[in-house]
Length: 119
Image (cartoon, rainbow, N blue to C red):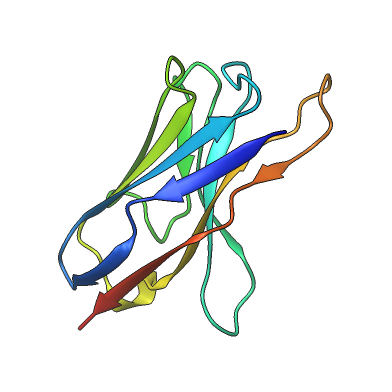
């Protein structure tokens, strides 16, 4: 059974940093793109960042570009999101995602972890 478990969230002051981790189990995802989404109260879930299976092609939402960095460790089956220069608007539940492929047409999601940025 595939399981994605996020960790590293919490409460931080504006301008601070956090590092989120998402550890996958039940399957090896070294050939899958992985990413992060977030959802604030009363808003739709939105894309934050994505990284290709090799780690060579990260891309970001404009709202986080230059502040957040996505990375992965395929040996640990883990994807990370470094959040710097945090703003109150970054407050949301953050979800990791493993993208579907032609061979595996499922999108896998973590349960989400809260990030709260105080002003």
